[in-house]
Every structure is written in C-alpha cells, then in structure tokens.
Image (cartoon, rainbow, N blue to C red; front, side):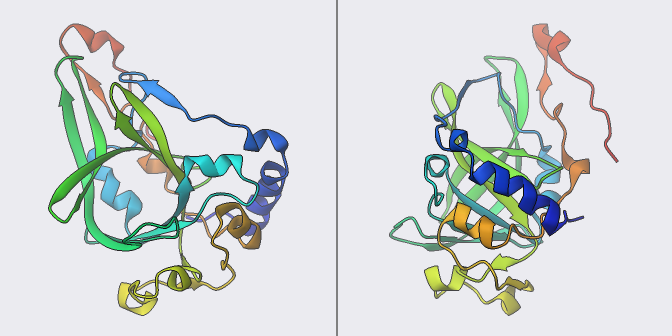
Length: 227
C-alpha cells in the first residue's frame, strides 16, 4: 500500500516551512520506556523490497535537512546501503533480521532490528508509522535509548544514490525501480522534490510486541489487530 503524493506534499510543506521543526533536541528514553513496535518475525516482511531514505537526527535542525543515506532491503534479508555523510565506506552490505532480546534484570523480552556486517552484530530499536511510512531508529547509549536516524520507507530508490555512491548495486540487479525526481543529497530538499511513494504496512505495527514476565506481567498490553 502506498500514500498519495498530493496528500504527502501538503503535509510536508507545512512541516518543512515551520520554524518549530528545526528546534528539536535529541530524544532519549530510559530502558523500559520505549520499545520497538514491530515484532521480530515481522521485521523482514516489513522492510522487504523497500528503500529506507533517511538522515541522522541532527538533520531536524537544518533547513535543507541532514545528509542523505539510502538503504535498500531485499526480500532475502540483505541490505545495501549508501551514505553521503562523509563516511569512509559510503557503500556497504549487511544482513538484517528481527531478534528477541531478554532483559532479565527488568523482566522483559523485546524485539530489535539486528544487522550483521563484516561478522559484527549491531542492534537498533525501530519505530514505524504505518500511516505515513515514516521510520526512525534508536541506539543504545547505556543506560538509555538515543534517537539515531529518521526517515521513511518508499517504493523506489532515489536517483541521487548512484551520484553519492557510484558502486552501489544497479537498480536492475536489485529488482528495484528508480525515483528520477529525487536528486538532492539533503533529506528535506529531497522531500520537496518528491516525497516518494510511501510504504504503508500498518498490519505490522504492534505496540505490544514486547513481553513482561515474572512480577511484571501486569504491565503487558493486549495487541489489537489492525488488519
């Protein structure tokens, strides 16, 4: 499911011209105060065959938006990434999946996005909006979850991707299509060019994907299907 370009353009125009949008501070959450809202087994189905167009959280304080990054998730659990933030390795590949973490000290099990790159595991907490296609991630900076990247899932890969990363796999080899209108290296500017055909999969949104146990079972919520 995708959202119409006209509807998104109207909303984005209001957001990007509002001065309040550029005064946000980094968000932090104590453990147990924020959880991923996509179950571990639904991480791959949610991300498969989508482009995550994103930037670092500090981009919220810049009119043009932060430097752009793009990640293409294939249907086999492999991601291909491109970053314009000055990274020494702007192009990368990794595997991705969902993983359940058991935090025994707090008596809670919760899902995370797990990436494996060059044999090293990385974990992120993701928050997905099934109504807008927006997606943000948080990184653990002990003992808190810290806001990291934000952006959105869309159907096509921005054309600027190959300008930033000439060795990024071709769209044809990935079985993907290209959004020729998206040519800016800056996130907000790119949204103004074209907000992208958003990926809307609200049936994967689950605010009860975590599970409390032991003496904290009374904190569990009941998931209501959104199908």
